[in-house]
Image (cartoon, rainbow, N blue to C red; front, side, top):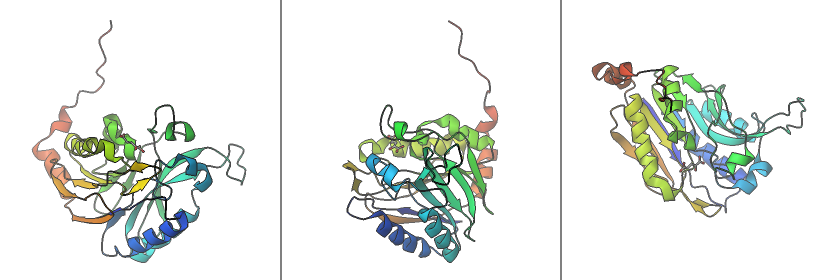
Amino acid sequence: MRASLLQIDVNDAETVDARRRRVAALVREQAGSDLVVLPELWTTGAFAYEEFAAEAEPLEGPTYEVMAKAASDAGVWLHAGSIPERAASDSGSAAGDGPLYNTSLVFSPSGELAAAYRKIHRFGFDKGEAVLMGAGAELVTVRLPETVVGVATCYDLRFPELFRGLVDAGAETLVIPAGWPERRRSHWTLLAQARAVENQAYVLACGTAGTHAGVPQAGHSIVVDPWGEVLAEAGAGEEILVVDFDPAKVAATREQFPALKDRLLGLEAPRR
Ligand SMILES: O=C(O)CCC(=O)C(=O)O
């Protein structure tokens, strides 16, 4: 199976419309890959908090339209990264004036929406995304012909229980778009490898390059196999990381070294 991770340079000089067109062209160039992955919030930048509300889109908004077409033109599965989604209000108003979510979109090779995932763990503690966006509540997996993909977004990478949930739901390949800052790049690489080793799964983690809203991005998108070996790693700048991998290695690793079977479920902390 061939995957292309598009580590996009997200910067304040390029408009959202221009970036959307540029990224769609890059997706089209990946015809021949099975799966194309984009980063988190690549239209605005994950740290461009002031842009979230202004650039928010309904689920089936401009990014959806452009990416659905790009996926079908290229004939690829496309994890189109995430968008700032403006949900419909509770009253169902067509104005779409409900809460914001950090929502990932996955398209099939015919351009159908295969899955949408609202990021569960919002970043920022008491500011930024954590206060501007709502939290998703559902784990999402997508069945591709060759593998079952489990999706997570950026800060989710720090929460191993989410990935155990995805494994329990059948995930074999963990796809993680991100806008991870350079300042914590060592955590990014370490956690990507940890999630691969502990879940005996492939990890495809696609970040952004460049600097937006004053925050230099880590780049260094990475693909890790179920044994924890790094199959490919990008540098700091914009780059397309193309990697061939064998989805059958997940079952083989889980059979040869069946650590997942030794999980002890339901452990409780001792009472004090
Ligand atoms: O956890 C981190 O260090 C980075 C997380 C982040 O930037 C995000 O989720 O947008």
